[in-house]
Image 1 (cartoon, rainbow, N blue to C red):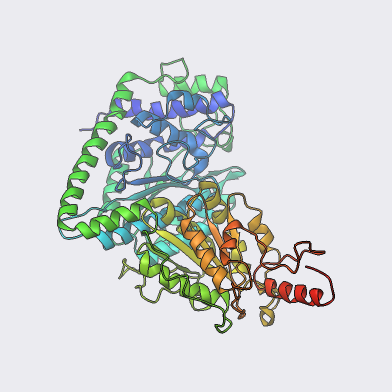
Image 2: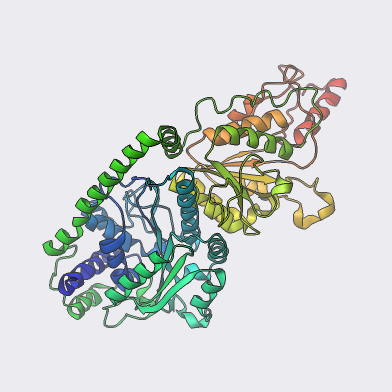
Length: 582
């Protein structure tokens, strides 16, 4: 039976750990953690399947704080449940070099599943994670051997649901009937500029029902049993994603600031912190005090997680005995590296003397060879697969009827496509790619940037890369997009000059684990360069290389990428005829 007194103590422990972290930094967002603490507590205490001592356990549930500004809530939960996040790190909240930055960053604090902060991105990342869960489950689970079976939870805010990327991703999730996806909507009715009704008045539940979601509530986010019941109802609905609408009070417990925008993005202040202690009956005057009874209760997550993972490990060993080949493939997928020898056959795809071929066409041929060797290579296009040449001919199509497919139909949802691919990558078990025209990379810039920040292996394919797309007019002719993409730190942008360089570009994309790769491809046919006359195409892996030179002491250097390389070569040879060495 629930112990109301202990539950209240634990919830207030979350609240005051968050309050104290923000107050110490004199910077941050205390309001959302104070309001959302009860529902977060119910989820983490009663439902979330995780092992704090092994944050990378493959079959753990995922929890995404899409409302990344509420990071103090997540850091408090991670510390309290026993993750390797010492209390000193919460005392260094938002400080340079800490593991507790203002918005959660993947790879810093254990238990942070994805970098969030730009609103809506975490929402869409979760859809990608749920896709990966279904894909892996349908590829590897066997009767009596449920090796992949976990939920993706997220806490989303009013701001998340106002973002276009969340709408795109919600529509896709409903279409795909992702029943392992359960989101909590922190409906506190407050934005920075005032009440949300100044800009956000639709019925959110009805909107999500129209997307094909199951909705629960609106419920009182402070009613623990209502939250418990809502989660159970959502788990029972296994053919639709679920949105639990929770009414909360931002800054709950603050006598003068609760329910106002004042508590959204600023520390409470010393006096208001003291008044909040009195209001909530918090008798501990020293900041960062953790009542032992509450801490002992939270730390039960360690033993629960250990037992659940041990039980899963036992099932995995039984699976390995019954299905050794599948178990090996599953391990390879989790490790994430293409199988040894995966690139065999690529070198023979193209040679001098072949008919001219567009790099988008060459890319399609390369991708199909990769697909034969790398079963967990999967992705799709924003309704442009026939034009971007990104269909995997030997693979099925992913849908609500067939979760085994490697071909994804993202629809005309470029922004969500990028963020969903990030979720697939960060979940593990898949190497995702996306595809659209280069001009529409502008719609994808936020998830591309986040993929670079997180160091995710995602291949972003962009075709129709130049003004050669003449008849469609200036709206479809990319001019500034290459510069914009190259300006993003930790991203590799490759624009191959011919089919042989396209092979090398794909090799780079699959072998690079430190971040995303952008492949920029053309529509027009280009000659296949004779590599006995010109430098080896592997020079692509250096970023830039000398393809041809008339002299060791050139008078002029011509630089080009993609389809312009052939123009530069022709120009160089014309200059040579005129006695100017290039």
